[in-house]
Length: 138
Image 1 (cartoon, helix red, strand yellow):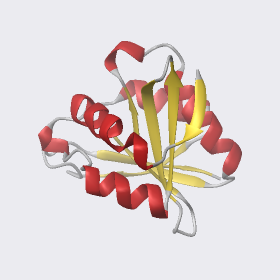
Image 2 (cartoon, helix red, strand yellow):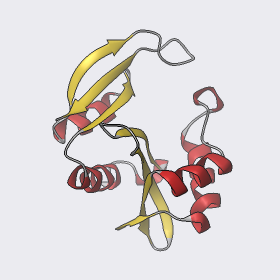
Image 3 (cartoon, one colour):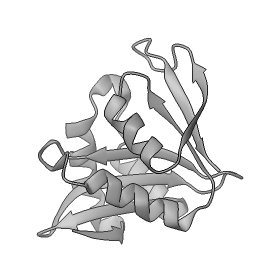
Image 4 (cartoon, helix red, strand yellow):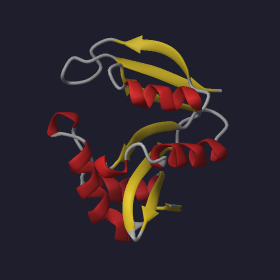
């Protein structure tokens, strides 16, 4: 597995991965959105055998950079892809913040492993009414 910065030639594969991971209710990122974020923020990809297994998107324009999305393909879950991506981002930024679905216990445990702490609960944050947990790493 190799962690690399995503570029425009990755847009189609990233969009396909995004659509497979996130249902329409969660508003998956479009090609235009990936193009925008590749230009203005940080997207890292985890690649194995020339295939993108996962990605992480960090919005870097905030005082405290915000992890906007972390996605891992279904077949690559549990193989350290998310940890590799998150570890790389944590090595680049001292302080980070994010929101995570309250019912996404696997992601919450991963974030806690990297030193993230719960800051607050945000009620009905997601379109399906699910609460979010805001987490910070300081």
